[in-house]
Length: 92
Image (cartoon, rainbow, N blue to C red; front, side, top):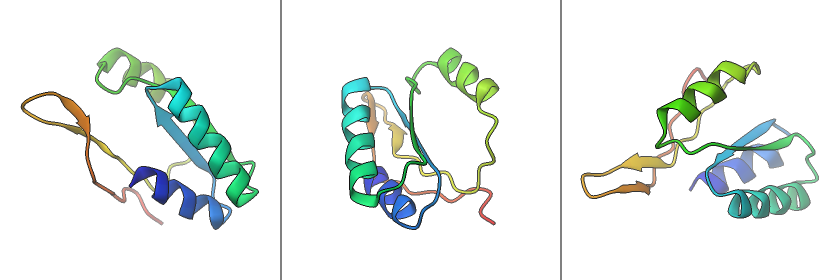
């Protein structure tokens, strides 16, 4: 779901920041979205969101305005996994 949300935002010429833990999968998504939308304002950041230190480092260095947050990361009782949530935060 995160991929599709990112694709739709990029199609509307919005700036998209993909935050992925897997560099190969993230790079593939970045290239596909840029090619399909002709939008160069799509960026990739490699962050393992299961590691609080990496989240802190990323957020301390992220200085762009944030209008929409799409999160597909979900913690379950069994393990960390990617779920199906689309959350709007600070939407203007």
